[in-house]
Length: 294
Image 1 (cartoon, rainbow, N blue to C red):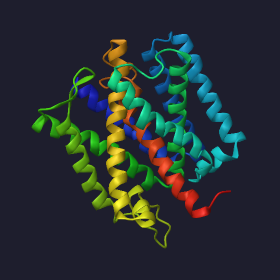
Image 2: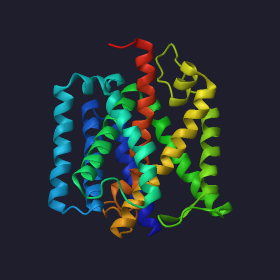
Image 3: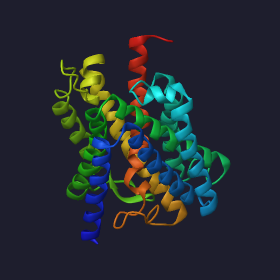
Image 4: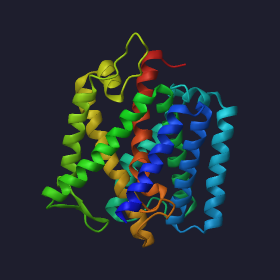
């Protein structure tokens, strides 16, 4: 199992890194869209939708995303790194993650269940995640990587600190393995990451892209960067827990079986679906503040 898991991770990383570095911009954008469409399909399956209906809705999102790149200037602009026109969608997704999702977790019930509300929420959050990925990549590969690092470092630190020091369960009825000590470990690790990465990627004469850390530090200061990292780390935990709730309600271990040794696509990107829209809401607010309302 470990060998299969490692092999799958290596192949996936090679494909994604290769596409990010060498594929045409449109090709990489469409690859990200395809990944989010698969995640939406799995999400809808966890809500209890039949595979045919879930596939239809996921395909509709893929079609809508592809057409929006060609038809809507705001989406094409996001692909260049400018997302202030998408701010209302990002704010709605942020409210879902920082208000609706915690309430759902406290009640042990997913937002909207399998109703039209639940399906719409899944569609909105997956679509907003794709747009946020699109915008992050438009700002620069270093920026995209820095946001990914926030999630990966938090996940890794939470796992090891939870195993080493975990005593107090975070949400035992939803995810018995997660502990408050793991959350504190994730926070500490991400703050150390921000301190180190804040010195990397500032605006340079050669046009080097900023990191999320240097961008926020340079524009609004170190205190806001500290608050941002705390918020995003907690949002990452919420995203992870919410997918665990989806699986718990459905009574399954994984969201799918597409990735041998890893489960489904949603299992691998659950925290990303929360972190990226919230992060790009913050960045878009900063962009809007610099340029003023249009």
